[in-house]
Length: 434
Image (cartoon, rainbow, N blue to C red; front, side, top):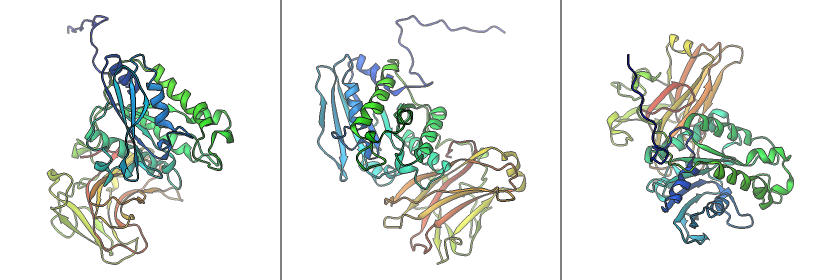
């Protein structure tokens, strides 16, 4: 069989955007080389709040961008008290303009931007040339690896649903002075980078290499870096990735939260399409909950309806429905990671404990593995929010895998209903949506 070999493009020919190991910094350099204005969104916790004393991550990135030969003007608009303030001018030049929208929420997790703040923050409506992410510390206390990876991936992939192709750069934040809890976030971001084509700024490793000097932390604060720590660890890491990035267009991959072939879903009725009685076919209810179809509150109208769960006043252990894989379903998964995904909707004013999903893989002699999504402290009312448990390792001697949908995880269950749609379970580390 003859093989057609395409000619190599001339050295000066335009190249297609890179989709392999795309470096978002290179994309920005490419645009600036062409004299084009640039927009950047920074999705952050408090480590991007402060413009001075200390001058935190996004403002240090602005300083590095300002050194580009195009001599850009760099403007930063920062979120504060529920609104964006006026733009601050970080550099004045004669070239293109770089505008940075800094959505930095103190104490926030990534999911805080997915509910009511999704539109208010501008995350929904502005498609930037680059997304930077500065999150980690608020995800690691009292959590598991599967929870943290799920929280990072659902937020990132939800963003890619709205803004396909936008390249992403994430920051590996400094470790805590009082422990190793941040290892969980760092490990999760490194897995995301390997699987989902994002670039990483490693400000974490320099802290460890230097022995986490006390001078590198804000006075009496085991989390927030000082200017000394930022200048010794953050700034060199930002410059290192910036300098190493080849100036060429970059294109991020499509989202994993849509397009899954239903035949690949290990939960055959995860879309609740077969629902002729009191429960969706294949699901079993505990005594403290009632289930019904809800055609009026749906995320994906192609699925027809959502599942509505309401409590009958039972305890946290009885207000759920469950699906257990058949006997032959769990055997091929032994010793392998699996990921559970679903959309959850709760009314405004409902407690933050309303709505959760659990993945449980049972094994003898205390070898079982289980994980439940954790509640959000911030109101996510009247919005569909993606939840996932990613990479739960099925025990080698697993004899049963069960998925549970909870009305409420509090001891005293709420009066409001909760809604679910598009529940999937797949092998691997990635959440997959229908």
